[in-house]
Amino acid sequence: MKLKLIVASMSMLGFVSCQVLAATNTTTTTTTDTTTTTTAPAPKHHRHHHKKVHHVKKVEAEIVYKDMPVMAEPVCTISHSSMLMIGMTQNMGRAIPSSCNPGWFERIMLSGGINVDMGKWGNRNGNFIGENTQRLSLNDAYFNVGAKINDWTKAFASISYNTATINDPTAATPANHIAEYSAAYSNNAQSGSTQTLQLEQAFITLANFDESPIFVQVGKQFQDFSRYPLHPITRSLTQVMSETLATSAKIGFVAPMGFTGSAFVFDNPIPQIGQSSKPTNYGASLGIDMPSDQFGWDLGVAYLWDLMGVNDIAYAVNQFNIAAGLGEGYQSRTSGVAAYGDINFGPFVFDARYTTATGSFNVQDLPSRGVADISPMTGLPIAGATGAKPWTAGVQAGYGFDAFWGRQQDIFLGYQWSGEAAGLLLPKHRWLAGYNIDMWKDTKIGIEWDHDNAYGTGSGGNGKTTNLVSLRAGVQFS
Image 1 (tube, helix red, strand yellow):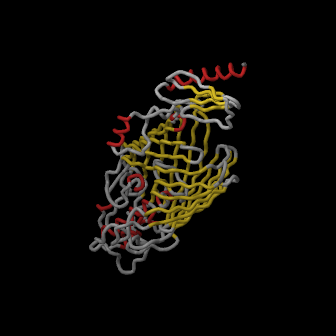
Image 2 (cartoon, rainbow, N blue to C red; image 1 turned 60 degrees about the horizontal axis):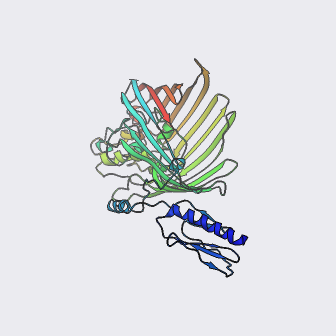
Image 3 (tube, rainbow, N blue to C red; image 1 turned 90 degrees about the vertical axis):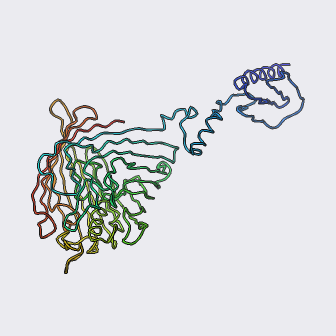
């Protein structure tokens, strides 16, 4: 008798639960060792079968746990008309925002920032790659989106709007090549001069470092060739020879003791002369990183099979072949190596960078004395000219402190130099100094002075000494 009352109570609970999904005609079956009770929305009646049952039946939208009906969360569906509209706009199979994705804000992360460069007092005609000579420009306005898909999959995308100095390499002449702020951001190493809005980065990361030190990344990203900040006021000489932004496939590792490494493959930004497709390039890196506020350091080295994968090198080389009437592209490859090291203790920071070609470039691609080795009449190398083997190096020291109303501030001083890099539109020497202050939370004001000594006219430069002072106001949000 007690057993029948329990079964009847269970049946009533199952019936009430079914009203939540009254739109369905689901039949609910509840079992015990001796009795099976079946309920349905209509008609409402009970059948008792005195038969031993050895299994539990699961039905749509309901789970039977220890003979007790427990409702699962209701299934969310997209309306038929919405599905048709998705198909009509060719978005079938894509991630579509809808009310069926609760908690999306817990998986999607947003951040961004704006850097406004202004002033540019002094000489704005140095014609050096990496310098922004616009009186007032956005450098840059960016918006980042990160997504945690699951424990093994993450995604990242960055949209950037940049109006720092942008030029067109196709406007080069044999005696006059044109510099700009960054061919990577402008995406115009091959041609074009109006690329201000870019999908700067977009890549997928497959990794779970709680389970494995190995990771895989695919998509558009900066390659692990040296270290540098994105969108500085003036890009360093080593950054110009190292910055590589491309759609790539990468495999690497992050070991518990701070050891890191990767191998990556991507297509060059320009083709070889006479070819329509762009050659495939590859590289590898190895480093160790021991971060700490009190005493931290890192050290790393990287190899690139073809330096034409560096956006600014491709931009500069492309001008030599365009001016000679040979078409857009390059003649042959030259590999390169980059090394970096940083150390910080307390408020002091020191860093060093070095990037070099491992061999000489084709003389048509990059003469050792730049345009001084080019005939102004034909655009071809003069007799006796040789290919350049460029290198760049730089050291910088900084000091951070709190003063003046308790604001975080830092000052820095650096020196950079290069060899056989006139054809890359780089100076021979550069001194720089700067000051930054956090005015309010995530709001920074900075000023930088660059003192450049160009290569002599006989070595492909203009022989000038120039000074440029820049002011920046920047904010970031997350």
